[in-house]
Image (cartoon, rainbow, N blue to C red):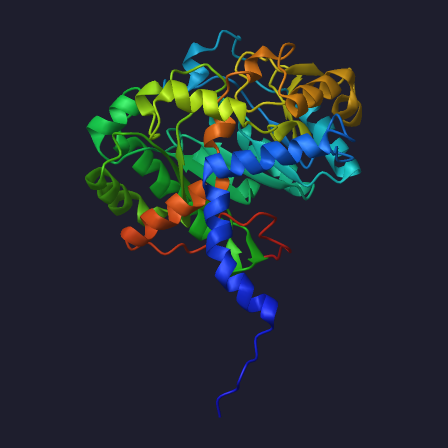
Length: 389
């Protein structure tokens, strides 16, 4: 017997409106205009915006050193000396995160985290304290069995491996001469170890071994349909999911003109987007601990220009509420960056649209017959309880 299901009126409207809402969220100009006017309304009563009691996550820079010189990345133009995170400072940070109930930790900013000699230990220390650890890497060092094993045993919930093509010529152009077989060998090692010894935890997909492996790709004009096809052929067997995203200027470190994909002339496009810009979400979401102890609020702060203090001299809560943070929030609410000039021309918020990137990712996956084994786009923690194996 077929069961008849009666839809409530609001459920039917939701089905009709969902595609429209999706289009609004992933269309940057429309989204900007909506959020611009929303910010103007909020600032009437809240000049610093609606400030949470504590950050939602902490981003830690294991090191700002990198072994690549990617075409679209500002790391190669950085003048800040290379440094490596000290474990005592990191341990203190983790304990403070636990005390404040801050759940999420990212071990990656603008360097290659696997260059830190104790990166596996950094991951393990976070997992042992119940923090939701995420790591991103260019994958070049994962061929070392000891490193890949340390990362897997450390228990990050998500491990992103970033690569832009399987074609040697294209990859060499975008990633400073990197050869695809280097990353392929590392991915094979990582996936084998994950499937053999990865910690098993309950998730929306049942009991799975961690980490969830996501391959991220920065889409450039070189990413043609043929390059796209070979990309999926080469990497799909190693990935639980993919993440495709577009290029921006890394807080004005990089000239993104060669990668521009808009319909308007770039100068007109930039003027329009600055006119309808909305506040960057980082000052209300995240604190960034750089390897030398500086606290920043920007994932593209290669030379610590968005500096709000030093960890150790102030606690996380003191840093979260200090005068520098208040000034930065007021600047973003009023779109007045005279005291924070590096924010003025940053195109990250013009390009970093999660809804647009998810739409792009799912479109490319469908076109190439890839079905994600796990949805790496879940907004909150995908794993609940650990169990022994």
